Each structure stands twice: as structure tokens, then as C-alpha cells.
Image (tube, rainbow, N blue to C red; front, side, top):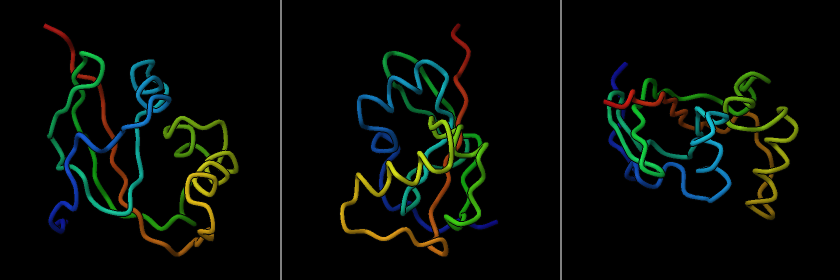
Length: 110
């Protein structure tokens, strides 16, 4: 699949303190954004560790699964939805809204 140009840089993919802590603990392995922030194979550092993007693809919010919500660091899809709505007051939850999924894995040290 040919991807559109990136709309932001990879260093903006995970920025809040809680999200960074979840990535470093291995509890967060995905991030959804309104635009594309990374290319497959691209790496970035958080907390002195390196992570590599393994997948980037579009998805409708309504297609998101419980397992995907857990990969985002949430215990459930409902918790994910509530968090997104709290971060964006006044924004409705639109199941047909397209987001870009970014998935990653840690790069082995050494």
C-alpha cells in the first residue's frame, strides 16, 4: 500500500508522560493519530531506548478492537474512548473517522 506523506515527525508520536512510561514498560505498542507520523522501519528513542515502527496503516475508529485498545495501553475499548474524549473536550466519537495506526517493537540493545 502506498502511503501519503507524513503529517508530523516520529518524535511527536508518543509525547505525554503516561504514554512514554507505558511504552518503556512494554504496555503500549501502538498509537493512533489523525495523521501519519512515521514510516515502517523508522526508529526513535524514548527514555534511552530505541523502538522501530513495524506497521503503519489507516483504520476507522469503529473498527478498533479490544486487543488494539490494550496495545494502546488501555484496559478496554471503552477506557480508550473515554480517554480520547477527555483529551479533546467537545469532540464527538465518530466511528467512521479515519486514524493512522502506528505499531512498534523495541530494538534489542547491543
